[in-house]
Each structure stands twice: as C-alpha cells, then as structure tokens.
Image 1 (cartoon, rainbow, N blue to C red):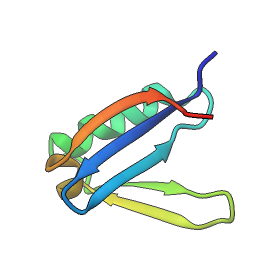
Image 2 (image 1 turned 45 degrees about the vertical axis):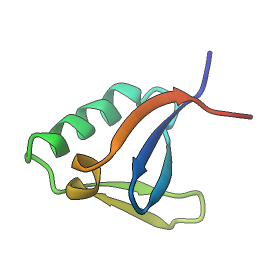
Image 3 (image 1 turned 135 degrees about the vertical axis):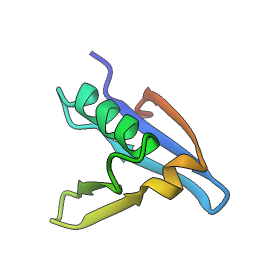
Length: 71
C-alpha cells in the first residue's frame, strides 16, 4: 500500500503534510471543511510533539495534491 502525503503549493512555498495510516479520508474531510469555511485550520502533530497549523486561508489560496510519498 502506498503512503500518501498532501502537497500544498502556495506562493510562500510548498508544504508537505504526512497522512497517518488509515486517516486519508479524515484528512480529505478536513480539507473540504477548510475550503467551505466550516473549519479555521488543519492542525497536524509532528513526531516530536510539534504542532503544525495550516490556516484555511493558506489552503484556499493554494494548489493541493494528494500524492504518494517519495522515499
């Protein structure tokens, strides 16, 4: 099974969001909520307990792709 990531291409740079195993549909739902103004941001916890916040304004003004993770 391929491991997926979400690539967010914005004018400020390209952001890669790792999708944990089995949560691709949940991440898609969160993206949809941000695009429809139902959710203010996507918050992803990193391996070291860090939190990464992707505001809905960033998501709305970006090109978004769900692709296989490059090894």
